[in-house]
Length: 119
Image (cartoon, rainbow, N blue to C red; front, side, top):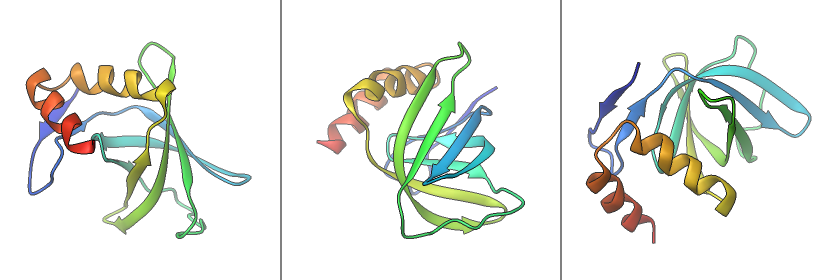
């Protein structure tokens, strides 16, 4: 089930419950996706969270069809048992799956407008 929210944020956040693996160096945490946008991801917080906050993370989201979406991000905030990540770069292999995922849950005109903000 998904929900679409547009608050004070620049990009529409789509609420999705999907498995996500958070990687940093040799560490890995298996969590649940809370929401996603073109510029960020929120997850639930692991019971034991001992990451290096100033170092980059690789987020691997397992999509409903079993394929994976890989995003490179930095931790933005930790609050209310959630982790908020800012996506700094989406490579060519992952932009199409990200756009498809968001396009399944939001208006395509809005998605195109938001994509133009990234340029």
